[in-house]
Length: 178
Image 1 (spheres, rainbow, N blue to C red):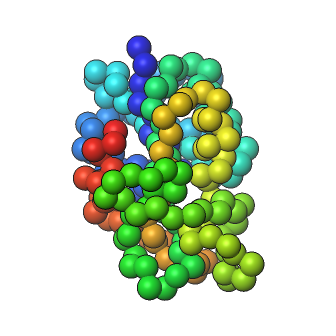
Image 2 (tube, helix red, strand yellow):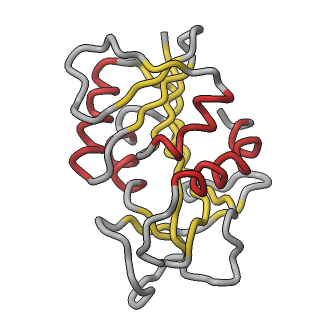
């Protein structure tokens, strides 16, 4: 049976989807890459994967998913820093396709948070979308990258509750595409 994949790199980014889609963690999967958590619904329609951050971790987690599941639609959902201080914190963007009612923004993926927007040529910055697309492009035709503005390129750690509320506030806008 084919599934819709939702990929995040933290529980705080995924919690709204776990709650609203009534997903339960599957602890019975063998050979799951270290640190990866998988959540599923009882109808086997949705597969939510929480991987660690970093290129290798994301590619390993998604490689495992595409090897073991048939995915027809895949989403990367998370937060992003923004180089434009006039964009409100909590603003939702789709960065890989134009969607009615959703802002479009260019995105750069970096391996560690940026401290300045010097030499940055995009509006948004994250640490995972490029690797999600790299792993997913050959395995799935319908891909979506959704990012919520969380900061203006500050390097301080964001509280889980803050991240969870950012995603929860835009859930209804993303849900219609799932």
